[in-house]
Image (cartoon, rainbow, N blue to C red; front, top):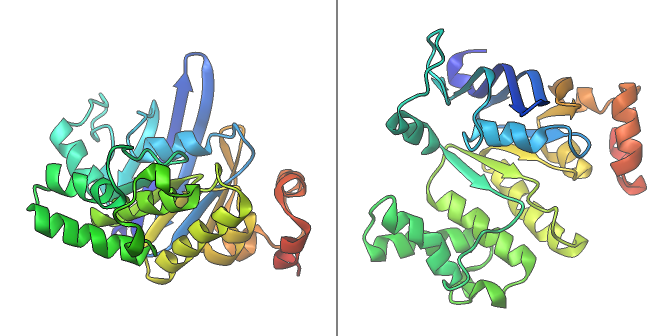
Length: 265
């Protein structure tokens, strides 16, 4: 695979919190223009790995590259931290959507989406709000632009958060269990937006327990357990029976019976 085709490359990545080793020898590649889903039981290290990819956590071992550029440390043996300006340049390619919506309660949906465009990108107010409105319309919330977060459902708030990430025009969006705090009906509206982004060719890395979404939408699936990668491959290969014993055990816990037909054969 050429460097131009790889959005994120991790090699030998490890992360500790005190004496607790939460990631060990992680190796994976997420390709540009594809959806990569990270699945696994709670506590398997999925969210920590995603946060390392976004440099919200600093990994202790190994290397992470974002579109060919190192994230966190230079390539020298001393592993000196990269200058903040270099980190900021890499981060500009990344959008992030969290479990919690993290919206400013005193701002409307339009204000939440346009604020970073004005403060970080220094766009004039009219241009920033025009781009923000376009993103709200993209996620189906153009008519709710003047509403405050308290006036929006959880699914609508998460869609505002997605619009906020998209407004910065990232090359890739990282999603950290974006539906975990939503009930099933609201989960569906968020997943619909994510499916549309996938159809549009957005590069996405998604930590999720939505196994049906991973099977239907992702091209690439990585199964983690105990801080290690147990399976890594194309979605059809990972979910093809017979499963890895640990994956089978996991799916028995998380897979609803209606979705099980996705993985037959």
